[in-house]
Amino acid sequence: MKKIISVATAFVLCFLLFTGCGDSSVKLNEVMDKINADFNLSLTKLEKAEDLYTYYSIDTADVKQFAAEIDSNNNAPKEIVLVEAADDAAADRVESALTTRFNSIYSQYSSYSPDQLDMVKDCKVTKNGNFVSMIVADKASDMLNVYYEYVK
Figure 1 (cartoon, rainbow, N blue to C red):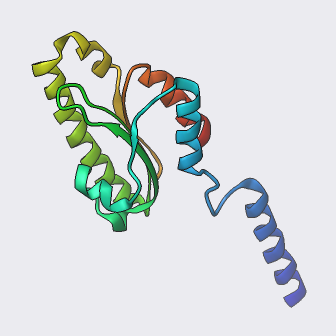
Figure 2 (figure 1 turned 180 degrees about the horizontal axis):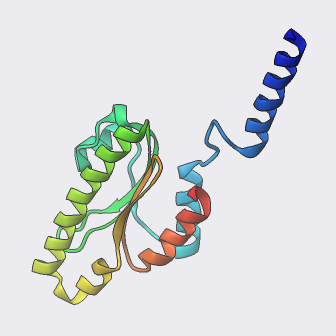
């Protein structure tokens, strides 16, 4: 009986390993590199998780990994923020923080750059499991498709 249980346990573990369950293999820095390569961006990279708190009020404990690049031009900011949250609750908090920032950016464009407001209307905050993104840039929907190739 112990052999059957051992074999069954080994089979389940192998199955989980081969089906991709368990540890995530998505590396958000690689996703950002792909976005940069495809869209020729020249934004400033945020290096430390503490920067996410500075810019977005995202607690570092909520972040498992991230990649973020910004051009914080006061009148027309461009920002790409990709976050893998620590868990479901953390993903909800990250989504809320990025939505707050997105709404602020939308207001900025409405007030100072109404000619570019259509670009912002095509941008959004997304959540897929523990992965949360905010992309505010030209061709945001195309960038989001690149991001989805990795996280969906």
